[in-house]
Structure formats: structure tokens, C-alpha cells
Length: 396
Image (cartoon, rainbow, N blue to C red):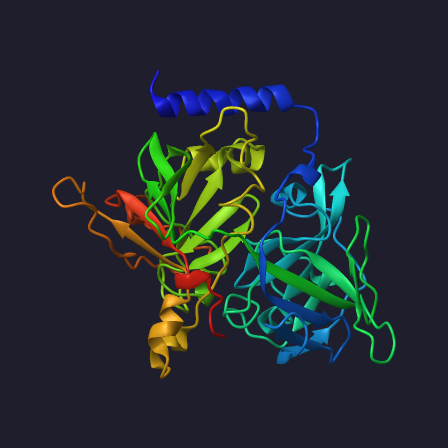
């Protein structure tokens, strides 16, 4: 039996064996690592959004809260159920979602969100998850600051409530618990932890049965899993309009979203775990070409939703269009995530890595996808996510 057939069969068997019971989210995305920074969001109109890179001793303002929330959404997007309460469930250029628990009857995660200023105006339609009443709105633009501009958290980053302990005494940090509902004036602190050792790249062999592996600074490779279904096309995945070509648009427990379009245009593809691909809402991923479906190498492992390194704690959107124009442009670029590809077999002199090809689409959802969209990445043989050199974080 070919390796990719075996991987797919194993995944299907796991689904059959686990059908009818909820995942134990406590076992998913066990957060460990070194703190690289923390974010503070005051849930109050006019409240500060700030970042600290010295463990909370000093803070730098990133923006202001425009509208607070006192609600949660008990019917979150499907993948939110795979992240435990009190952790970042999704990180993107157009939103941060935080898990506040699990709704067993609906088999959905309970979440609330932090949004950029563009979403303060009513959204007529949205292909991404959006819950207007359970969101903290900020004046930070999409694609900047905490929304992929150097200060974005990882999926799985722990979230705490900060309370004053008294004059001269450091604030008390209490983990957000299952069933939490935001109150006006709550001070939320997201602690961003980076795993150690940290890789320099994740590579995907874009063919059925292709290898998925991490690469470390010393050249060591760690086999992660298999490509079950390669990617060949692009789609109108919202949020790609807020980032550049070959940049991470979003990461959550069930997706890695990669932009193929320039800032201001739509165009992207997604990498999803096989368990998520087997859910009814993702049936399209088996018929269309805009998704790469991957599965873990270990037969005894779950279906990879919410698990490190692809779907928890290792990836985050990290890009600023102005990086090239700064005096420190070189260090800025080396501190960002970047995705490149090969289009040859690499048999003669090794892989010939090149920038992600520019593929963009009309933003109007009423316009059908052009025929070429389904084969826009048909020549891509390998995909590589380059991690920040030295582990980041980027410079905001």
C-alpha cells in the first residue's frame, strides 16, 4: 500500500472510532515555550491596546479600544472547539478569536473576538467568521500591530485577566477560565510563548503522499506527516486583501491560510488537517483545488486539529508593507514569516526556491472564479514556510 493511501485510511479509521464523542480539548495544544512578548487589551471604550517585551515591566501603546463587549458567541466556527478555554483560538490579519469554552449540544467552541477598525462599520457579507456583538473593536488597522503587523499572538497563546493587587504590588494574573464572559473594564493579557527549539522552515512536498517536515537551524529535519491532497488553485479567502504575496494570512486549529495576492487584492489557498477536511462543511475541499489536505505521520495520533506545529503555537501572520522602506529593512524582512515555492523537480541541483507567484482575483463575490483559478498553482511542486530568523518577533 502506498504511503499516502495508508495515511488516508488511518485517518478515516480514526474518524470512525471517534465518531459520536467530542474531542478532549484539554489534550490539544499544550502550551510551552519562552515568552517573547505579551499583549494587553482593556475592554473599555478608550481602553489601551499595548505590547510589552520585558514581561510586563514596560508597555508600548499600539492602539485604542473603540467598542467593548460583554458577550460571547456560543456558536463559534468549527475549529474553535479544538482549542481549550483561555487560549487564542485564531490569529489573523483581520481578527483574533479567543476561546471561552465548548458548547457540547452544538459541538461548537465558545469565543469572543478582537477586531481591527475596518470591521466597526457593518459588514454586508463575510466569508470569515464574524460575530459583531461579541467583539472588542479597536482602532488598529487590519494587517498592522496585533493583526499580523509584528505583534500578533500564536494560536494557543494563554489569555489572562489582570487585576490590581495594590500600591507597589505587581498585578495579579488569573487565567481566563471555561465559561468566562467579558465584563466592561476587564484587562485581558495575552502571553505569547515561542516553542524551543524553534524551526527555520516547514516544507510541503506538493503531491499525494508528499512529505511534510520541519527544518531546524542545524539542518535536522523532523517528519510531521503526509500530503493527502495537494493544492493546485486559489480562492477568494477573505483577509488576503490585508497582506502581501507569500504571507501568512491566518492560522487556527484547522487552517494555515497563505496569500498569493498583493496587499489590497484577494487571492489565497489553505492547508487544512484531514480531520477538518472530513467534516461536512469542508466537503468542497475534496472536489476543488484551493486546499491542501495533510495528515500526521503517527498512526496513533489524532487528526491534527489544534495540534502543534502547524495548527497551534508555531505560526502567526507577520508582515508590514513598509518593511522595505525602513533603515533596518534587512532585519525586518528576516524577522517575518515568508512562503516560497519550487516549480521544478529539483533532481539536478536541489530545489530551486522562488517567490510565491502572484495570483489575484476580482474581489466581487458575485463574479464566478475564472477557469485559471483552479490551476493557478498547478506548477508548484514544493511549498516552504520560512520562519523568522532567530525566532522573531518581528518589528512592528
